[in-house]
Image (cartoon, rainbow, N blue to C red; front, side, top):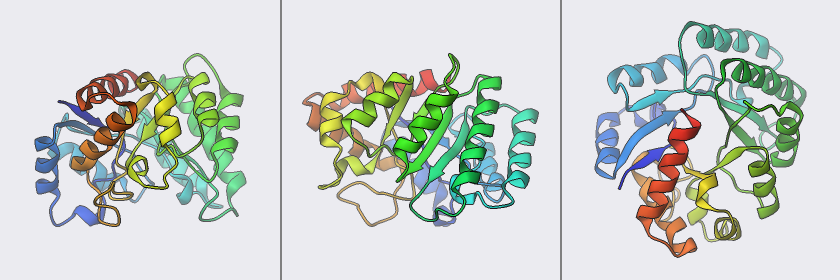
Length: 254
C-alpha cells in the first residue's frame, strides 16, 4: 500500500530533533512522497534543505500563508514571485484566507490570494488553499478567478456536503486529514457521499494529529490512520483509499 502525503510542514522546529527518524517512520508506513507547503520567507531555507536531503521524497511548494499576510505583504510576495520564476515548484501554496486568528488583514489576504492565483494560472500550477473559518468566502474567490487551468486542493477540508460539492464543481480536490478521525469532526457525511475521485490525504503535520494521537505532534506516518478511517466510513478497503488518493495526488501535482 502506497500513500501520498499532500500537506506536511515537516521543516518545522518541532521535528528538529528527530527528522530523520520521522522520515523513516513515514517510509515504513507506506508514505512514498511528502509534499511540503511553504509558509513565508522564514520557512523557505528549512523547507529546501529537506528537499536537498531527501530528493524526490520531500517536495516543496512556494507560496505565502494567509496568517503571514499583513500590511507589508507585498514584500513577502516579491520573494515568492522571485522563487517561482527561478525554479520549478509543484504548486503555489500554502495560500488562502483565514478568519479564525485575525480578521484585520482580510482585504490584504484576498489581494494576496488573487495575485498568487494568477501566478499559478500563468505557470499552469495548482494552488493549495488554506481557508480556516472562511470556506464560503474562499469558494467565492475561486469562482471569480475560474479558468480551465485553475485547479488545486482545499487543504484541511472541514465543511459541509454542500460546500464540498461546490468545490468539486470548481475542479478542486478536498484535502482530508486528522479531523476525519475526530468524534465531532463533522466529516462523516462528506466522506460517505463524496467519491474517492475528489479526495487526497494529508496530515498538516505537526498539527491536527488523528485519533488516537490527538493532542500530540502529528507526522506523515499517521496518514495510515486517516486512510483507515475513510475506509471504515465508506465500507471499503484501506488499499482502495490509498490507490485512489495517491492517483489523485499525482494527477493534481502533475
